[in-house]
Length: 175
Image 1: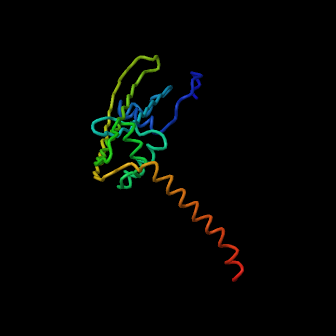
Image 2: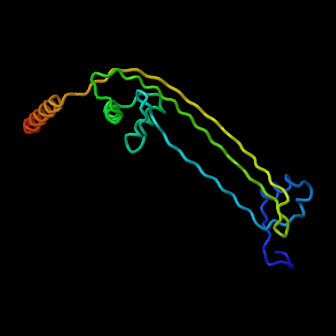
Image 3: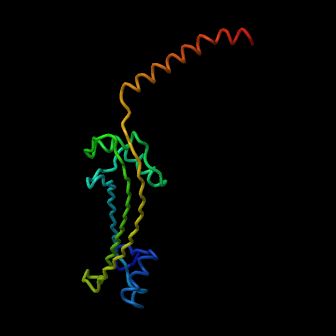
């Protein structure tokens, strides 16, 4: 803290280097009284199905993202839900999954230099932009399982379980 002023100096090496890059050698003796950094990041992931955007949100969105990042098609039941969301309801469906992930990160740095009276001496704006892109394609036939098949499967499963339970006393008696 300076004796002449009750405002503490900011002693941060990164900030000091930024000031020196703006004003050269004078930055070493400059008093830095205030500094502010701001950043923001917004991400939205969308899957295009027949040209219709479907937001990848919730549990289904996470399952689809995991599968596509692994280079695999999402599970059929997840795809069926997404097809319903997109308004595609015909069966069977030849499903071509093309995933394009584009990511762009833009960083802006605004550096201002003010004198001890608050007067603006210099101001610089630096912008950095980073773009990333990934693409994959998969084609498969999908047909929704009829409801009566699920009921028939569950009934057969119950019969097998009943048979297993009825055989337990016989198995135990031979051991």
